[in-house]
Image 1 (cartoon, rainbow, N blue to C red):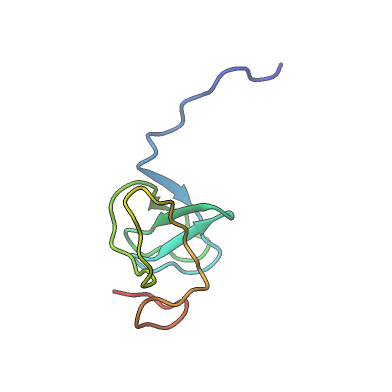
Image 2 (cartoon, rainbow, N blue to C red):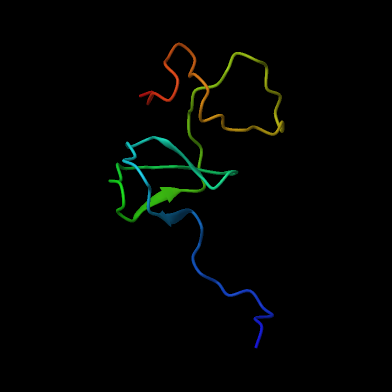
Length: 90
């Protein structure tokens, strides 16, 4: 029988994630191709941990103007302002 109703799984402030490589505390994590989360603590490769799916975080951005309400996108290959591409800023 096909499922016809949604089934509650968890609140969604944080979600389980098992990374393919080590994740540093504060690192932005791209899950799939569009879902962005932040690791509040370090997570070792292959070990299930939790990443924050909600909240307010300071992250590096380019120097272009962003108006309130504009959509934002994470460029994992981008270079943080004044930093090195793919480096952890902290």
